[in-house]
Image 1 (tube, rainbow, N blue to C red):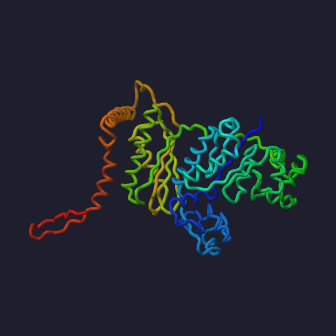
Image 2 (cartoon, one colour):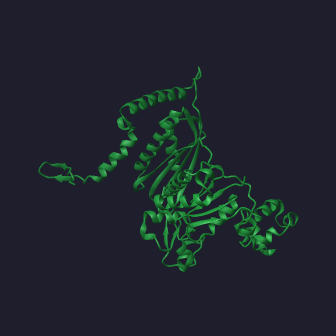
Length: 417
């Protein structure tokens, strides 16, 4: 049975999502790049910017010379993750075999064809759902494999479906440049193809495997198959991961350590609770700090013993925070990942050291806190560090005290809303 593979893609996905949030960006040349330097490279550009001669990978200052009206926005990882998950959820309504990507997804419709019809019908329904629920315009390509469906979707200029008939894969790919084939990029292989005057896919397909081996070596058999439209790679759904992730965006961009540590404590409590419910402990911690200018920094720490206790996790995360967050730029978001999840330690040793006894006391305290929060709510018992940041924020919003000469002391004026 021939496979039915559908590829759905949203061009310039980060910019498309930003335009949903901010409608003033629509119809204007937009690019995505970190805002920490004018030498930062453009990560993504809109069609309007491309029409003005702007290319992805060029510095911001160089792009502004070609397009003075260019609007550069910072990357939004949280928005990207949310949009990618929404796209994956919509695709999963038609088949459980979905391979997600950044603004794109592969769907294997071979087994669900009798239920939803051919791939072109599913593509039309999926494009309509993406437009109604996400406000995005998607392109679709259908074919017998991932290679053909991807190329078919990428060549679309307007929303629609490009359906490549089975058996026409080689003739479909023939007029395209060699760069559309996976493994042929703007590197040594592309330069080699230019030297050999192999510019189109049909020219590569006309050569035999021994002839191609002289040019590309062991890559020749795979390249020959791809030039003929043969792609045996399956659609691979995301694998189940034991990684536990918690992330949060601040209400406003901050560089106050007390407020940032309070947010970290919230992430630690959430991760720790999920670990304890699984009766697992994390050994590897990864902290990502997202700044207001779009730059992200990441730090990692491996613990000697897997743990799920809030105090032990917080101590490690605080150390990781001060070694990672060194820029003076304001922070807009934090992401904590607990990986290498393993079973919690069982019965303690008979001659355990003093540190093990302290850990046992912390475990007993943690169990009591979990029981209280489960019965009376999460805010029934709070760690002091979380309350300290809230107290400082409250004090900062209050007016300073003024001297009262009649009573010979400072008086605090209460602000009125």
